[in-house]
Image: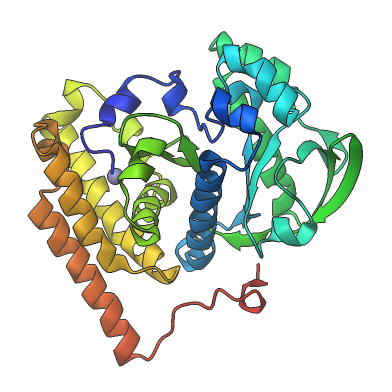
Length: 344
Ligand SMILES: [Zn+2]
């Protein structure tokens, strides 16, 4: 997606919003209450739908990605002023924290729970969170924020991994075996901008966009679209073509048509992914209507994005193809039951 709000990406690689920031700092009130918060529930909702899409879409992803069903947060994702609190509340100065564990996922089966802190995988310690946070502040080591997850993924790709973690004061070991799927690294970033985008291998959406959505089906449409950008490696493709991440030059001439092409491809694959995960993809139509209705005054939208009419036609075509495949061939959507998924 990312209609007018390319601004967010344009704002640059180092803005908090463009960091995979599941770890939006929690508010004081919420901290005081110490209870399951709206944000915690929202993190779970996003993690669950991302996981389902990643799992159901595996036929679209020739290179299997190890899905665990847990999402993590990192000290470096918090602003400097919030880090002491993040360390105190979540132990994030010790390692990546488990933010959400999707029910019936590999992480749930391994016994992981929200609040666990990861210390090591297969005996190798994760990079120091404090060092990573320092690097982030100096803008010298931004990729390091994702380093822990990359390390975990690399280990899981070669089979089940032994995870050492901290639960309260206790060190615990669990065996985690991932399921093969699509790279569905999803993040919920706390922001007042209604936006979603794909960046550095992550599908990122904001809390303001979450508020704008009216159902899980719409949320699945949004995540399906952004995960599709990731699968299709659109950010890297556009970068290689010299299309700027934002700014006026993105909206002109060849650049605009290149961006528009990636939008159409992401719509096409995104609808298929969302459908495969069992969501009602017709939700895409009212969603885009509301979205365009809200932002149609922004001129760059029309240069870099398909018109609402074109978008609707494309989506309806894909849905018709899927419905046709369903009835003509008698094909079924993949079962999301556990048994069907134990294949790598
Ligand atoms: Zn898009």
